[in-house]
Length: 120
Length: 110
Image (cartoon, rainbow over all chains, first blue to last red; front, side):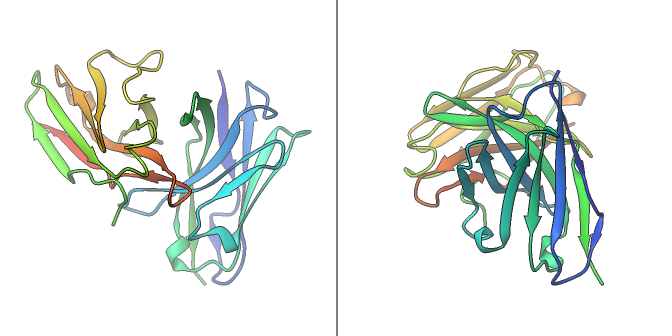
């Protein structure tokens, strides 16, 4: 059974860079797309972006200038960096697997989520 | 303001059937598949319906999805207390070039 687990600092100072890692177990990271999604307290889901092992990426246009996603196949994990954070970036961050299906796709495996608070 | 529009809340009695709507446009629902996710309180979202109306393995057949034009619906029959959750629709948007979610619908089983 595939399992995803987010890790990283739970507190980040304003203007600094948020860095999270998603460890994948029970399957290889070398196939499928992998995504990050976040959810502010009491709010809905917001897609941050996705990437494929080949380097192909899609980022949320509203976050694109601040987002970097990368992968370490040797450790079977992938990472998110979000720069110049503000209080508006405070949220639970989820990593998820994106499975392509015909001309579309869906998020079929999710991590449990990690709360990141931006505060001085 | 979410790109996909869902009712904020809905309530129904146990054993009854409820339908949650998701309204979009030609650039998202009209041209791409819709997925539905269930988020139990304090938990991560879980895939409920994919590609408009397909059920992932392990998901109860009390859940069903449909789509017509630029709108989609999630139906839940034989409501149970364990169905109390937030439900989100999602689809790729060709114009925005991003995955978009509905604002979520909080289901209360009376």
